[in-house]
Amino acid sequence: SSTRVTESQVTQVPFKTSQKVAGLLVIGASASTYAFLNADVGVKRTVEFWWRVFPIYLHYRFYQLLNRDLNILGEEFTENKYNELHDLYTDRVKDMVYSMRGFYLKNCQLMVLKDDFVPPQYMKWLKDTQDNVPSDFRSNAEAKEYTKRMLLEEQGLLFEDVFSSWEDEPIGVASIGQVHRATLRRTGQVVAVKILCPGMETKFRSDIRTLKSFCQLAMPQHVSAFAEIEKQFCTEFDYTKEAENLNIIYEAIMPKWSHAVAIPKPHMELCSRHVLVMEHLDGVKLVDGIRRQYRKLAALQGKSLEDLEAERRRFIEEGKFKFKSLDENRAESVATAWWLYLNDLLLAPDSNVLRFAYNCSVLRWWYGPCEYKRTEVPVDLGHLLELLGRVHGCQIFEHGRFNGDPHPGNILLLSDGRLGLIDYGQVKTMSFQNRVKYAKLIVAHRRGDKKEIIRLHFDELGTVTRKRDTEVGYLMSCFYNDRDTEDVCGGRNIVSFVDWMEKMDPMVHLPEDFLFASRVSIMLRGMGKAFGLQLRMSQLWEPEAAAFLKAHDIDY
Image 1 (cartoon, rainbow, N blue to C red):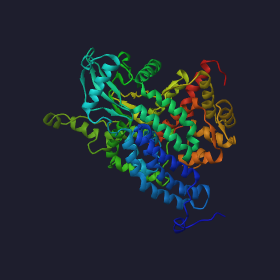
Image 2 (cartoon, one colour; image 1 turned 45 degrees about the vertical axis):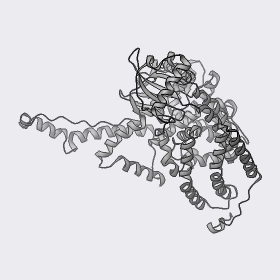
Image 3 (tube, one colour; image 1 turned 90 degrees about the horizontal axis):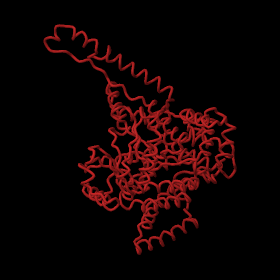
Image 4 (tube, rainbow, N blue to C red; image 1 turned 30 degrees about the vertical axis):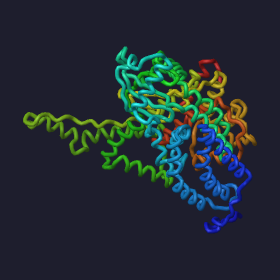
C-alpha cells in the first residue's frame, strides 16, 4: 500500500536540487548578466519571466512530485496544499502578467474560456483580461499621434485628410493593439481603426520562445503545439495580412450567413502594417449583452445577477451543477418565454389584464391610457452557440480558411440581433486533403464509431504517441475535437485529464494542420460551459462536414 505522510513530515523532506535545476539557474544567471549588459529586450523579458515564475513552479512541482510521481502524499492533502499555493501566488502572477503583457496576457485571455482550466483564485482576475486591459500607450493623445505617424510613414496619408472625427478613448484594448472609433472624411462612414502597439512583435516572439522552454520543463506534452502557435501568431503583427484575411472571410461567409452574422468589411486602401481600417459594427460584447438581459430576468425572481452567478459557482464547486445540452436549452428557452408572457399577462402585480381593465374604464379618460408591458425575452444562448458552431464549421469545411481565435471578446451582440464576428488576426488555412480527413473524423464522432475514430486519429490525421494506446487515443480525439463530458474525462478537470493522458501515453507529434481546428472546438465548448451548456462539436459540425464530403462526391 502507498505510504502517506503528515504535513509536519512533508516540511522535513529535503529538497534536492536536480542537475536540470542547477543548469537552469546557471543559465539564468548568465542570461541575466548578458541582458542587462547588452539591453536586449527579448532576453530581459526571458530573464524576468524565469526570475518571477521559476520559484513558483518549483513550489508547485515539489507537491506534484510527492503526489503524482512518488505517490507519497494523498490526494486530499495535496489538493489542500495546492489551494494554499493558489492563495499565495495568484497576486504575484497577476502583477507579472499585467506588467509584462505581451504573449503572457494573450495566453491568459485564452485560459479563461473554461472555468475548470485554472483554479478559482486565478480565475477571479483572469476574466478581466478579456475586456479590462489597460492601454499600452501612456495617453490617448500618444495613441492618436502614433496613428498619424503610421499613416504618413506607411501610406503617405495625412490623418486630417482621412478622418473627419476621431474618438480618443479606445473602444477596445487587446494584447497587441487597440481600436478607436472614427469617421471617414470622404464618405462620412463610421469606422473602427485598429492600431498595432509599437514593439509588440519583439515581445511576443520572445515570450513564445520563453514559454516553449518552460513547457519543455513543466508541460512537455504541449511543446509540439507551440511551434504552430508561434507560426500562426506571427501573422498578427502585419495588419495588411489581417485585412486580406478579413476580406476573404467576408466574401466567403456573408453571402450565406448575412441574415445571422456580420463581419466588418475592411477598407483595403487605408490598411497598412500597423493600421487597419474597417467597417464599424454597432453592438456590445456578447458576454456584456447576455449579462444585461439576464440581470433583468434575475430581478423578476427577486435576485441579483451576482446572486445567481454565486449560486452557480457554488453548485459547480460542490459537483451539483448540471450542464444542459442544446436540446435541453431549447426546451428551457421556450418555457422561459412562456413564463414571461404569462407573468406579464396575469401574474405580475401590474399585469396586462389589470392594465386592460384600467384602459376599458372611465379612469383612462381622466388619467390617460396605460401602456401594456412586455418583458424582453433573454437571448437564446443555445441558438447563438449553435449558430457560432455552424458558421465556424462552414469556414473550416467549405472554405478551408477559419478564425483560429474565436474567444468571447471577439464576438459582439449587435443592435439588430445578429452576431458580430471580429478580429481575424489568426486565420488558419486547411488544405483540401486535410479537410476531407477532418470531415471524416467529425462524422465518425457523430456516429459514435470508436474503431473508425481511432483509425483516423492515428493513421489519417497522423497523431503519434509513444505507446499508440488506442483507448487513450480515442479519448484524446474526443477531448480535442468533440466533447469533454464525464465519459471522456472521467470526472477530472481539464488540466488533470491532460496530465493523465500524457502519463498514460506521452505525445510525440501533434499534427499541426489540425491543431487550430481542435483549438476552435475547445474554445467554442468553453464558451458553452461559461453559459452552462455542454456542447458536442460533432453535433454542430456534422451537417457542414457531411455536406462538404457530399459536394465533392466522397462517399463516407
